[in-house]
Length: 348
Ligand code: NAD
Image (cartoon, rainbow, N blue to C red; front, side, top):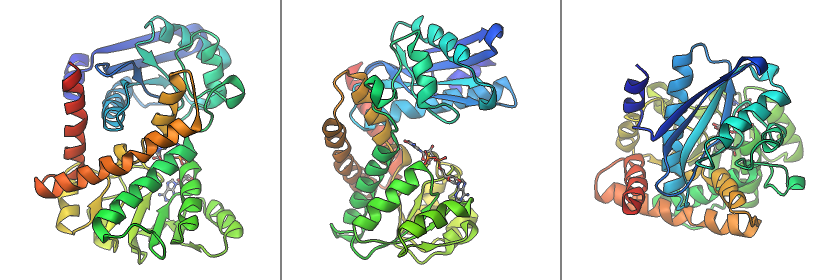
């Protein structure tokens, strides 16, 4: 059953199961591909309903990291880890023990933050292994990756606007941003600086209202109605699977470009987007700013300028994806996966 899942979700190089009951640690590290360099990918802590669910999640996420890093031109591979535990029960000892398991892999896998883990948890892991990124700025790390993810999303929006609307400025464009969390908040600020008119929402409406108090020109929309907004660009920055048959009927935009992972409820949904003449910026390409940030940190000489230089390249990668997608009549995500796979093949 385990090998069947590994085959189904991408023929991973190595999958490690670890268990240390004394600190309530149980989890999986999945190393998908290391052709371009060590596998980097965050550690997700989640109370998975079953071990099978955890395995499928880590296999799927680690494969996505391979594509994300390869498409962003990074010299690193794809991996991910999951810890089966409610983040309410996390302890420093649990992370220190997790660090020992990471260390036993000799640098083939490097971890970072993900859902349920924080900068503080990374510091505990650092006590037992150097193979961890996303450390605090005081510890020589790069801190919160969200502003960089928002930056790459902005660069991606500019590439999509240039390709689809044939203009270089975002001035006056209407953007609907779904989710006012870490990334959505930064992105909304950047869009305002570019002169966009923005509508925002969050399931916790207070977050959107707080943003509006700072920037009264934004429009706050009930989160259920964000899909009905009259806009040029719809920017999902909350959870995944938000583009479905139902929401697609309501969307009025000509571009979907946002930071959320796995925005489409299924990959085949991209055929419907093309039929509706909506340009879609593949999520793992546009949201790569965060992983670019930890990659530069892992190289040991971190500067924000280096991160920004690498983020700027996403503009050209996306333009190539859009052009090839039209010329070859393929979905943008399929083209992006081809670009990633070609880079890996050239290295093998
Ligand atoms: P976050 O948890 O800080 O923010 C998500 C926000 O979305 C929260 O405020 C939440 O209340 C809101 N939300 C949830 N469901 C919603 C809904 N249906 N409608 C409106 N709002 C809703 O997370 P984040 O770090 O900002 O990440 C946002 C997305 O970007 C996630 O999908 C994440 O996987 C992806 N991403 C984040 C990074 C990063 O650097 N943080 C990097 C790559 C990808």
